[in-house]
Length: 284
Image (cartoon, rainbow, N blue to C red; front, side):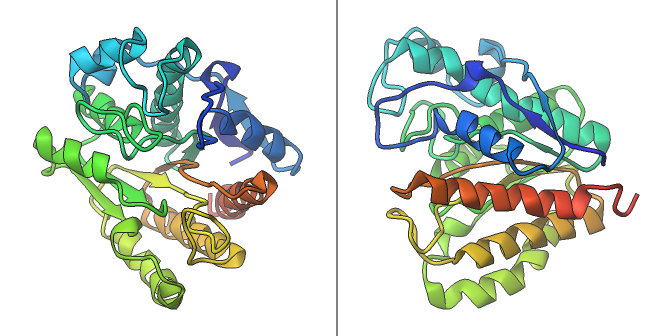
């Protein structure tokens, strides 16, 4: 690849007045990436529609959130957050489409998905863009099976709940590291297992990868992987997916260190790993 496709627009950025940086992180991450010198191709995402959001959520819930009539998961009902939500999910849907088109990789610098369930926003997650993206492509006949590789610190309970509620388990599967990995003593075994975990999606048309920064040892909501281990995590994910010929679309997921530069450094390393594996026509 000559450049890494990144789906970003100022329209997916909002001030949420909460403890989570999710709604404001895309702008900071993209600016940090632009300073790295890695070729990225910034493209405007297409916002998702109410119909598309309703493929993963109760339609009445979707309409109430967008009309600012119910909690958006950040503890408020701000119009600025509501306005950004179709673009946040739209960035991941756009990245998924591009990853399928180019057969390799694309990025959505967004987060705030995996705690959102069918009828409820929770844990700084409003709509579950992971399931939305998978459902949109499935409905369009572009995929038969999709795998979600969730390496955020926390269990993707909302994702699991929607998969169960809508009976999607025959074609949509999730591995969430937050369910079984929380201790520094597990780091070595976890890294050794990553190729196996990625390979478990061998029959999938696409992998959605949550490259969370919150498993970092210094994260107040995480704490079991070092910076170098997180970088190795990402390298192994991309290397294995590419070797298997499975397109991958990734997002930022969580990251809550008080020194936010440290969070951006982790996201920078994910982009570096992505470029190291896919850039400069490697393997083409």
